[in-house]
Image (tube, rainbow, N blue to C red; front, top):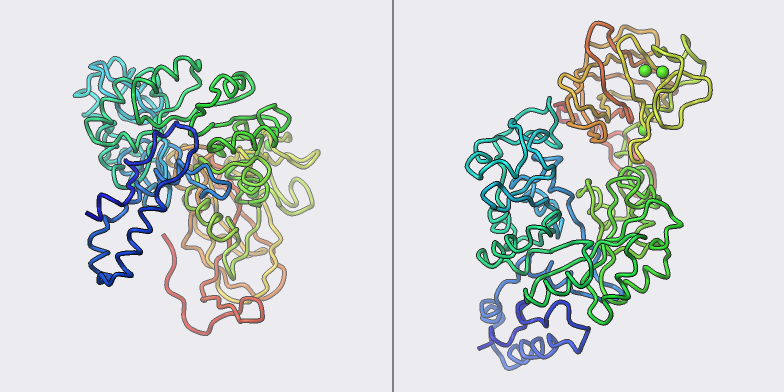
Length: 506
Ligand SMILES: [Ca+2]
Ligand SMILES: [Ca+2]
Ligand SMILES: [Ca+2]
């Protein structure tokens, strides 16, 4: 009885219908009445079906309210923990707090929807060729490569998943954004209906409005978001009273017409505003990496200035942290961070050695100096790092003690290279191997086994790259992490705890 009275997502009005009076109030009243009439609370709990994470995500996605929950989309799944577009990456994204997972859908030769970003399998698997030329059975024999793939990325045990596999995983966990699927929308729709996941699958396109309308009219209950930029912004008028659930808005410059806050405010009144923060040209530099330096430069601007309430990210955990606490990318308590590009003053041969006199990167290097500095979608890093090069850093240590050396690095190569660390004019450490991160733009904090005993005060650190070894990696920053356990006094800064620290290291 009661079950039938509670409004479940499947009872909600057609998702693309205009906002109207909401019904859940009556259902809630029914629950309260039962409680008042004396039903045992645990009986009520048993009678009310457990709302799944997917039910909540569906309900949230349809929320047009001004204070609707900000939703996180994991780009290609959580590829920092598992291969992009893999089942494990989809699971990890939901486990890390994403309500939506973006995946890329393509058809095999035998027209089965599978997950693959590129037209070919070359980058992300141990195979070769176009997805459209391979059967499902042939694809099933391939292994996915770690992270964002690439020729040198290690193979994993993960296989290319079918869309059906993914929808079954998502069924109770959240929504799946079906990117690149518009041309295969009939096949994708059949998967959703066969797996009972129509409410989990979000279609997306920049197709002509008539084409979208025809699809939605013929596929009742389909969730849909429209991709919008300056070239097709007239679609908003064309949709008229039947607006999409969301607009995925892209702007590479802040003066793009679609980046006008008043325009975005209008979109917010009819549905969700979805903005992507993975790369510079998706949101005029308001990126994930900019957010890690200062959230106000990235996600904060997207939420406040550009009215976003859906953000697609390559950094699910950091965005979740930001949404929960207002902070992201902060220096851990007790640690000391020095940016790679903030090397010491003094010039070539004194403060650094670089193999050529120009800045070969596209980032903000120092005039007349040869250190190569890149801007990787907001991550400012020393790049073009080669054997024989070295850099020195001035590091201020407030708390004496032992510190472990960590570095935030990136490289698509394996091996990527190595570095040694010396304190002042002391002997350098043994070589620290830099692990492949699968892309120049895929930064990751890698801890070493090198520890330094540092007195209070200013120290010079020297980072050097052996000449004999292959070297091709990028340095965002070095981080000295305390071996002791920093504790915070109620009224003061971090202090060293006397208790011994647990061992750190890879
Ligand atoms: Ca150079
Ligand atoms: Ca260099
Ligand atoms: Ca940096």
